[in-house]
Image (cartoon, rainbow, N blue to C red):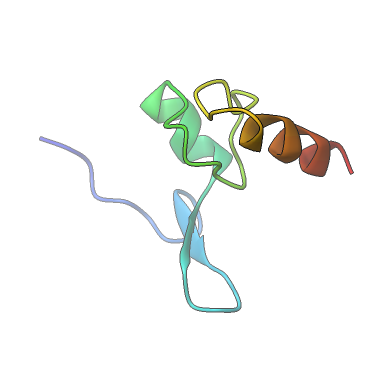
Length: 61
């Protein structure tokens, strides 16, 4: 059975009311989903080009 997500540890709400998954959540999941998540610790490895390149440059800024 999957663990229930904990607000503030696994996710938070951004200023627009959307759920943002944390780096902790992504590390526990164990892989990049390819959706360009804000806190992706996997350098967006499963995101398609040119989106991946844009995301990596944005993260470095």
